[in-house]
Image 1 (cartoon, rainbow, N blue to C red):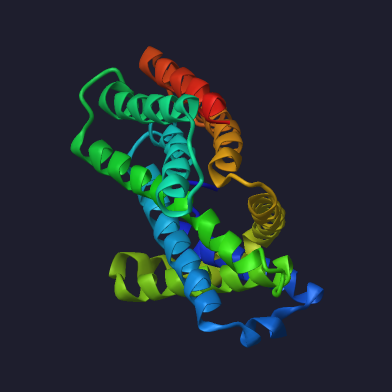
Image 2: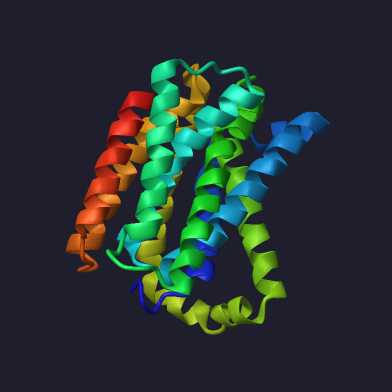
Length: 267
């Protein structure tokens, strides 16, 4: 299915389905009562998520899954740095060392991950995924700013975020002919794959709900990101090896191991 399913329309369909799943829980009316600051943070979260989704898709289309996905491990390091610089979340010496380890390992992965000089399209994919990691590193801070007051229910916030990202991706597709063409005939395809879209939407909704729940429950966003990304990275390597039949080079193993060490030092 991954080779034939248009990426942008699929993400839009999943986001719309997520929003519909949130509707029965209500609380959407409270969104209209929020002040301009709330809408600013919510809008920044939607924008960052939209950019991250587009770049993520472009990156995995240009390079091996096991080369670019581990770069998302930059997120906890970047989140910790952002928390320190902008939100006063202090880093101790061990956490600073951990940030350095993760960043150096990511640079090593991009330079020697395939055991050879990366192709131009792979270098572009590495840059895209690194920027994706940055976007997903700052999103939790916006989410926390919007939800920690408790004025908007988590289900309503998740639903509004999904609608916002779907609209942004649709807008991007309208502007780009190559992306716009992906929607041609997608309605017919959707009738065939809707169970998979529903499963993906349910899974993503639970994941996003508990992610935001975790963000507003912990005192240090960078630590929460560390645990989440370490599990994601290990799972991605397994998927790349066993599902996609990609080669796991010694360089990838070394970089991934260093990232895991850095992430757990950060946590």
